[in-house]
Length: 449
Image 1 (cartoon, rainbow, N blue to C red):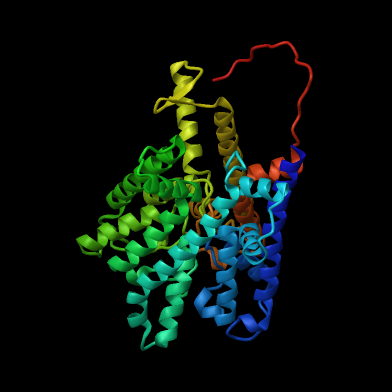
Image 2: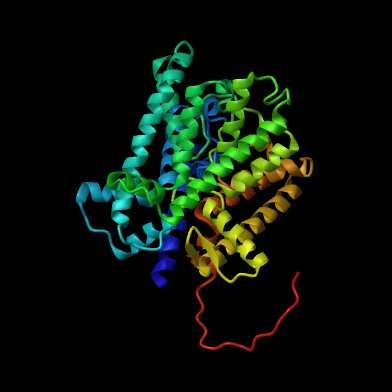
């Protein structure tokens, strides 16, 4: 148990270390187009957003940072998505062939959200190779659109760079882009290749490496009977994407500032994209500042749920959402067991899921409360949207991020960090230690409900 606590602390410290190093580099004059020092809070915000693969920005990535600054941000996204420990451990194995110690194995298992260390080295190798292969494929596909689009403005190199940067950002569910003007991908709202590639990368990164490893293994074995975890992830992901797209289409269909001005195909692409991106990428092809209130609420729910465990996405995770739903169903039906697809889910897993849900809601409420103090002039729904975006490490915004006060930026920095590292990891690593009392007290009923 002590080793598990040390592993969680190592995860927290490694993310914090990368964030601080990134902030220092982004502060330097060599990182900005103006060749002047960047305010440290803004640099820290940008570094945290990149490492926590969020995408909220106080400085437009293309307009403010030069190539060096953008390259640093892309590296921070890569380190944040796969984690510093994953990349350094894989590099060490590749260069030296050294054996991985027990603590490193425990840390990797905790990072991938798996309960067993068996096959963890194999999963590590698969994760890095799969990630780089998908990012390379994504960059190639995006280049077919970005290279000709930017040929006269930025030249061949500019189009290639935009393709590489956006591919890395999308797979790692980061939401950073190099298109300028805080526009994200709004100018490509009707482009099939951009929509399909970015959505594909977002979903691929958000499903989780354990799921992809099992899918490829089943394909090799030609046995298509998946584990309960993989079935839940694939089913919940599909349901959320389809239902989210349908609801967004309904609420925005006639909104002239979002979907209303687009042709039929454009409306379909935009609705689908806005359903995928909250899971948890942060790219946008419409301006959420003009979205209707129901759409903002749907988007906040999708951001809060996020992607799946062991991947590049944030949020409470699809399996947590599913487990809480099943727990509620069991309570309402008076059952003391949860059965899914001829399997029983352990009650300890349901307890963990409920704790994660309550803790994340608590963090969201505290962050909204603090930001409402620092930003009394902003509507509560815009503050809530920003907080859910930060906690879910999404990066979507209604446009208020660049105008926030220092206090609000610090609140969001902490919220992004908690959202990426995990409130459960932080609390069990530093505050709450396991207790195994050798005694029990008499039981007594209390009235609830």
